[in-house]
Image 1 (cartoon, rainbow, N blue to C red):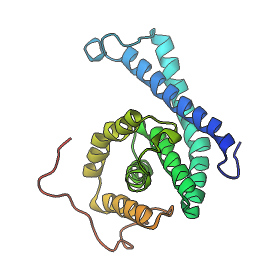
Image 2 (cartoon, helix red, strand yellow):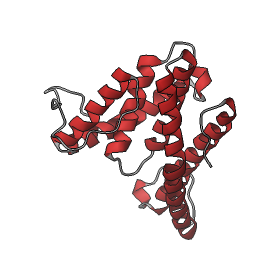
Image 3 (cartoon, one colour):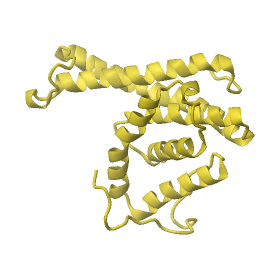
Length: 207
């Protein structure tokens, strides 16, 4: 169920991860749209009968749980090895792993410290390391990559604003450590180990 390292054969696994994540998102969207109030439904979007919509909601939750339990650990291990190697090809692989991890968390209903940290690390690492013209090697088009990060930004920003200062600082400090060292690193525990606290500027984009 897991490969010891990323290989060209693993591109098939990444295709399944992308398909799996998008299927979960579509099933969840259809169930929500079908079960929502009439005024809250999206016009022209697929709708399902009540029982079917409820079944879709349960299936989407089960699929999402398996995705996080089975795919995320594998992608994180591949990403860690690629970042440690540091060659140009390995950096491309690490960028691909970060993008796939971000795709999984893109549609998470309840964001967490790990989810937000992954989304921010993915964007920062990708922008800092991918060489221009190599986007097509990652399994995503440029438009998909742009949409992936920009679609999640309002939710990530809102999540950070709701958290205690110590938790938002842990996330942002983790992003700096990962991108600056080009190494996968665990989130810092609690506030005692934080060398500094992050705070929002007075005038910022409000989502």
